[in-house]
Amino acid sequence: MEALSLNKDFRLRHGGGVVHAVKNVSFGLYASAVVALVGESGSGKSTVAKCLAGQERLSSGSVRLRNEPVKLATRRAFRRYKREVQYVFQDPFASLNPVHTVQYTLAQPVKLHQGRRSRAEVRSAVIDLLEQVHLTPGEQFLAKYPHELSGGQRQRVSFARALAARPTVLLADEPVSMLDVSIRLDMLNLLSELCQSLHLALLYITHDIASARYFADEVLVMYAGEVVERGPAEVLTQQPAHPYTQLLMACSPDPNNLGSTLRRGADRARHDAEPRSNGDVTGCLFSPRCPFADERCREEHPLPTTLSPARVASCWRLGPAPANLSASPGTARPDASVDHRHTRTT
Image (cartoon, rainbow, N blue to C red; front, side, top):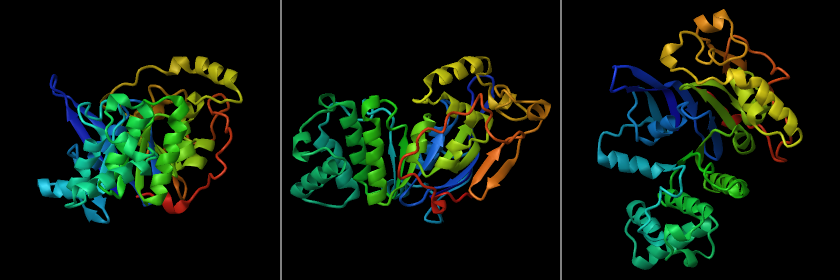
């Protein structure tokens, strides 16, 4: 899947203003690869995912699937598209209907997307889906209601429901943020396993850049609707170029040096003012909060600068991360590697 110059504007009911939720965002999703969209709340991450899922109509730009433009003019076209592209919601407590059993919840997409099947075949398919997301034995979960499941189990059911359509693209909107910290790693490992075994193209939306470093092949950092930096996950998090990325990394707890993290947070507090609407800033959108902003930053919008074949950042003051802002590199996962086949830019 390719997103080409996505723009999404929302008009305000009172005052007639416009909020530019997404501005000129482009990237690609590839089989067996994970692209992470990172940023704080309100940066436009979920709006991008909803545009890709067909839940929001684009103001301009286009989406291509298998190099064909996506057109959702009819209900039939939308249903065909949903077989290819599935969305996993953030809240596992709200995304499942509390009055339906797990069997009913999973049987409906199986019937809808996998053709006509007998009752026994549908039941067998549901059990296979449950075991695919490590809810075993699957038979024990068929008659359960959502309130009888833990948060992690509910989210696994949500994954299974998405997989019932046999998609090629999975859009996961902060799928672990509402789960206990103790099970987040298991859920990310499950997503990684599904991505590799089913050759899924996965968009992982998160505000936690540390999990993106562990989990993703490529990271796109969003601020105020724009992508301010992008690149291979390990390289971008080890050497963040944009000041906003540097601040995100500084906010990630360093288990080897927690005291310095707290001191950096205290030193940085004066820069963490509430961001203004992107319509109020003429230059760099991050300039009102940036500790390094100068007059040029406040007057001219920075152009994307290519730092390496797979790295791009938009800033007038690109350079190595200052010592007082950059997070400690920490320990990379043993299998961390940069695969430039999955970090192509458009």
